[in-house]
Amino acid sequence: MTSRLEQLCVERGLKMTEQRRVICRVLSESTDHPDVEKVYQRASALDPHISIATVYRTMRLLEEANVIRKHDFGDGRARFEETREGHHDHLIDMNSGEVIEFTNDAIEKLQLEVAKKLGYRLMGHKLELYGVKMKDAAKK
Image (cartoon, rainbow, N blue to C red; front, side):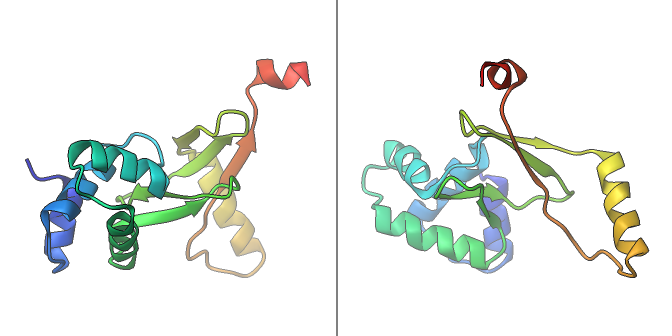
């Protein structure tokens, strides 16, 4: 079965080798925001012939083709997710590193209002919230 990411690559004219297909499948099935090492671990479990260099090259190619997006969540590793329709923001748990995607209409509206008040038309934005769970915060 072809993943959505594989389909996007084909639509954008990228040559799809079997190893690229495996990497695309791993990314499409990811529910987290894996770094290259995690992608490599998952891909090499499916195809032991995939090298870390192949994963790095493929990730760079997919990012340049705008089918994946790279994030820096402040943990020293580039993390990736599939580029999708619709906007979402991120909440990063500073203890576990878990990345939670969310949307909030009130935040979106407020950002537009702030830009307009300052004389700008908002063209895009990225919102990353960093926190600890309330029970963990109470211990500190």
